[in-house]
Length: 123
Image 1: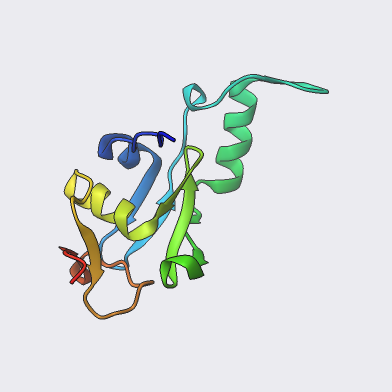
Image 2: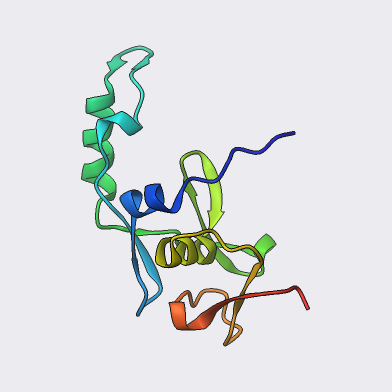
C-alpha cells in the first residue's frame, strides 16, 4: 500500500501557525481551493464548506488529541492524514520534514517547544 506524500512545509505554514515558545499549533484561515463541492441531500459549494470550516476552527489549537499508540504524543488530522504534532512543528519551524525520529529532550511527548525537539536515532 502506498501512503500519501507528506504536504510540503510551505503548505503546512499556510494551514497552521506554530508558536515555538509554547510548542502549540493553531489553525489558520483556509481558502476555498482546499475544499470540494459536494452533492448529497444538499449541494455544498467549496466556498460554503470553507466558510463553515473557518468559522469553527480558525485560531483554535490544533493537534490536541493524545495518542496512546504513540506514547502519549499529540496527534491531529490534516489533509485527511493523521500526523504527529511534534513532526509538524519541526517541519513548520525548520522548513523541512525531519529525516530521523524526533526526541523530546525532557521526555514529555506533549511538550512540543522547539527547544525540546531534536532529530535523533532510535537509540
